[in-house]
Image 1 (cartoon, rainbow, N blue to C red):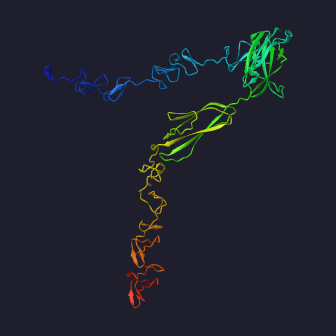
Image 2 (tube, rainbow, N blue to C red; image 1 turned 120 degrees about the horizontal axis):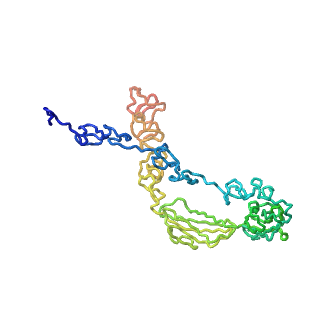
Length: 496
């Protein structure tokens, strides 16, 4: 105790921060437990901004509305969680696929043609138009350069100023016969002043050695209007269907003067031959579908060329089936090799329509057989004695049930029911029956009509043996002596 004036007092017991014993400190979640400061958030609470977790305090994870933690990028680019607010920050978080960073935002790049013109827009080089990535002439939409006029989708210099046709210096198609594709080449000039404007390639099917209906191959056309050139050479490739074809060539200038392919030679004829290719098919067959361990299977690999051309350098490959082993030396010896369980035959060539086959043998491994029903007996198909490997109640030595049409013990038959088996052919043994004049309980069946040879009495023809006394001559007799029946008119030989 300590002096307090003229009295003595017991000092209060406190922890190091002045908190009285068994009290909460002002510094939450501290608690003074008999002189020791401990965490006890469940009793003392937590400072502002923290939450109770058992007896400790934790600072909750702060997130934006989509669950992104403060100061982190959202999965939804370019969003960024800035102290609870989602803002666009592409420079930090990047952009979705197909977009690019522009400062802190994402933009979709403009799709353009080769000259930088945006899709579906007119080029600054009139009359070019960007049609989904391809520059095409569209004068009706985009207009023409100064000094030229619109003519459909092309531009032309008024014909009054140019009456001179362009010239075709050369025009050729190669090869003249082959499997394609064919290369069309040309060289043209213009001296009329309106400049070269359009190259056109035409194609027609053969019709009795003359061109049939002509078709303008617009995909191969060359628009030269924007080049303001008087000379041009170029080429294009075409791969038509098999048959005989004709190619023609037109060149136009800005004044719409047109010159056709020079004659001679005129349109050029080419022949595209039918491409003949081989088509090799394979078929694998076996000489049996059910085998036992140690037995062999003969496999035949048949091959045929159903194509139109000779197949060359053919390699036939097959794999030895799981659970079997290749029989050494059994394969057809025709450029044969065996490695890593793979069989290969080399066939140098196989004419169209030709066929052949190779063969080999494998032996079934003992490990390939398993006891499928788990009854401890291997199936007959694997050299065992189990007649039904899918039913674990059927195996040699199993209890045979008579009369159910099932061979439980695999002896090849269903045992017929008899007195010894404890059942009649058409029903259960009757527990108690009359055999003649005797009551019997064994070796006899009433319901199934089975009769033991041990019972020689003959039942009465009109029903059961009568139990009441009858007269046998002058004496009263009872049927329980085993030799008399009144109701059925049966008479014992001992009574006349």
